[in-house]
Length: 366
Image 1 (spheres, one colour):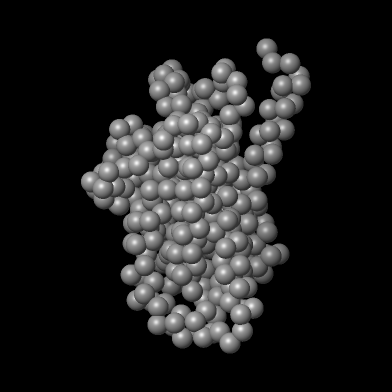
Image 2 (tube, one colour):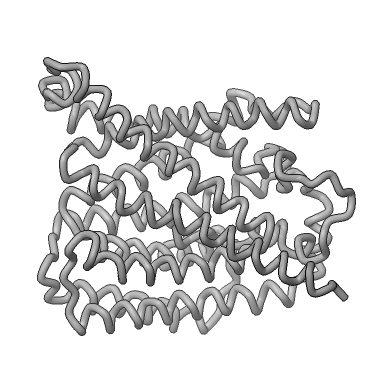
């Protein structure tokens, strides 16, 4: 049995990692919404974030290679185009449309509608046979869909264009996370480490989103005083500074998710995601001035019940498959980030149980 000091240390570590995840997850949502109030070029902002994420992931890979002395995986062009490109394009459109919607809708409506991505993830998981059919899934679908409908019904700050954008982003998010799960589970590709996955995804995501940016924002941005027609250097530096902060938050979000999963479990991440949604909805009226009726809050509660039921079902069935997951965990030690290792050869038993469980679950609440 673990001594009380070790138990306290684990609890404090878990709480610290959850708070670390909360800062980036909630922070990037409110930051992007704040930035869109004065900078109406969401696709350009997304492209800048992708460039920053690529640079940071490349630096992290270099540090990992220096630390371990082992070369990092680099895919062949054939595998890169055929197997990574679909995931990259779906991810780029998901993020691009999500940021674009901030021009039209409130944070609360965005949070609620984006939660419907769970429905699309379930659908595509069944299509690709990543999820086993279960009668309880019908109840999950009904709870989430009815909750989203109740929240959007007669909303005082409802915008159809923004709502459709987020709904389409949620649909693409279902494709995105399903393809990402398939991509990271293919051992022959060697992309089990999320940093390697980010490194390979960002360039194709940039190329996939760039034509849409040129069509929708290219001409307007080229004539804007925000960037190309500046008369003073200070506003230009301020613009790039604010955009860079968003890029750092985006990279920190991915990194904090990986830290939380690798040091606790995917269940902790899922539960933290639910509480993150609650915190975002509670903060939205105070930070962004969102107006919510009793029906909106009731719809939010119903939607949370559906998401919580889905997390509970995933936990129940994953425990039934615990032995097979433990066997898999010894085969993919790449998921344990070398920069975060303590130098001990023995890994805690709870980490062994959970290190690879996230390979078999969708990360659907971010």
